[in-house]
Image (cartoon, rainbow, N blue to C red; front, side):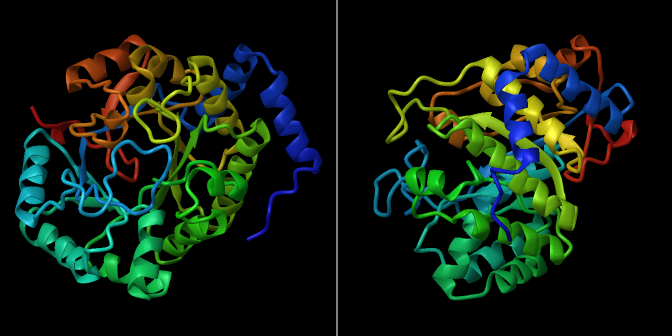
Length: 353
């Protein structure tokens, strides 16, 4: 992979657009790109559940309020039966996937993860969207296996797709400052590209507001675009601001505002035409901003969030019912439609009552 050339005319133009375009100008550009890619007045969403199988983690990220160090009294690892029960609760309300993520827990053997995949597919079959690139790299290092083998083994056991958690800002200088024990940029993107090579689809994320520069945010988008142009494997892009409350290093920081979110989302939509789907991050921004985001490049309203533990640990607790989500989407002028992980729409007759 090649580093982004910040002196190129294309990079300077993108940065100038971010710095100098008005909010409405950025919104119009992003909205036009959204309609070009999705000409029907439809906004999709998914019914799923986040299952954090463990909160024990040795990554020590300064922005995380969820993780607990090994031997902490609040540390846990869910057993298979507890995970199965959560899946059945999800399926009972029409859920079509689970998002399975945890910490970098040094006490869980690799076979446990493989057995978990097999258990889910045998007893509680559902689409498993799981294990962020940072987790995959942790497995690779911890169990001394090549990344390609880790992905192959997880996929053979039942993993269906990989989420983009742990992306933060894909600039090494930023990553060394905020999460020095986690994967650097090339490693993180390398997991994504290897998953694409093996036929898996993944999502890609961006968490901003940790003291990075505007140029750092633009570089993040250029790095994502570089991979997508080679593989076409990213199904969606999701961005959100740091939730500083309760975090080890950022608790006294002021959260970035809604205008910054909308500008960041809109610029990403303009710069990433190869990534078809953009989510509105209503879970961090609330429904009012979530609605506005549907005119700033987003064509998807994300997840019902039947369960969410990581963001809420930092004090952000926006929740919704299906009826409320659909009302919000309709009020914004769109038809709500449920989807699968690959963004294909579910037929109306498949919807739960």
